Length: 429
Image (cartoon, rainbow, N blue to C red; front, side, top):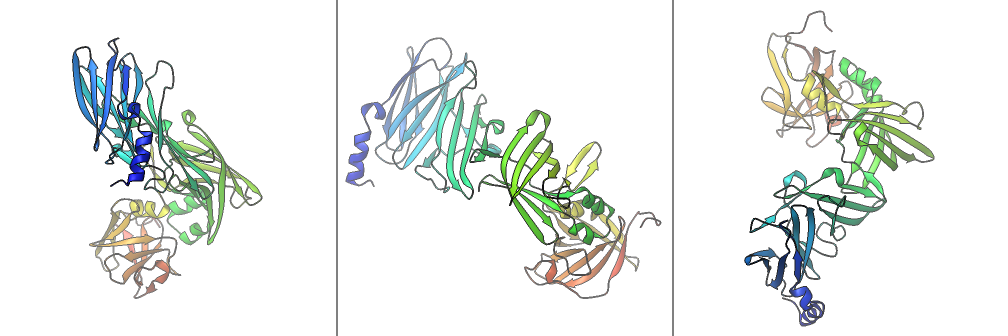
């Protein structure tokens, strides 16, 4: 319950105009003005639209506090009329709803964010539960004859500056839907793209990976991760060579969506790093990254692990996922004449199913002498060490693995055996 002091302060700000506002606008596009009135009640706003002799009423959301300030805003759509925004706020919280008046009916439009999820009716002010700054909103018109769009913005402190989030919602007939092309996140004015999250490998490394032989050499070759975390305001190029890493924060970003290209400039100590990116899919999947400025070892052209399927490029988040999905999807002959079935399990990051058991695949930390560790997920210690012997054969070693450890915690625990892919030609390595 509000204290007497808070109640007095609220009443001082709540004038008759803010408690019971009035708006005149052509909401339905018939050329005549409709009159909208609103009044604050406990936990709701009583809304009324008068069009000639016809009147319709509705209840709009409001904070639960007793003293509420109400606002009415017209958002023109062009020839079809206007949307109606109803705002209800206190010093602690704010509620927003959008309505359309058409054919004598007043209908509330849901505001749908990413994945089609509806935004909550109300939100806390002055910081909110997310830890970021307060969300503000406004209506914009891209052109004089274009429909209005709802723009929400939030600013917050990030590790490397000020993080600004912009969300644009466009009228879609029966809702306001997030428009990703006009939405975005930036840190100190540098946009952070919503790119496919993957690890990228030098072309020589990818060639080694697809040969399915000597993955130790593959791990020693450079790889690149583009860290684009819009929630935390992080935008870095992270290079890895063997066990060493180099992080280059991005200082400049530009893209030409129609051409499917982007350019980044990053800083690694005294070195300026340039990266040219080619994009595929819906324009958010980097499939080729050319780096310059770090020296011969890291100045490479990088790409994601993938396989050609017809005329389309399928890309994976990592080489481990590519191996699980492409290489282990097979039946294998054992030296004793038996059969072992393996395949990917679940969704990325994939696990590997070996008969009835499921394992996680560790490509980065295998025990010495093997290339891949298959770690048990059933609470047991029994895992496998895998070495690839070309496209159609593997050497596997029983391993005893520590609980919750990575591949380096496994130890050999039995004799090795060589398995051959069923259906492979005998003269193929």
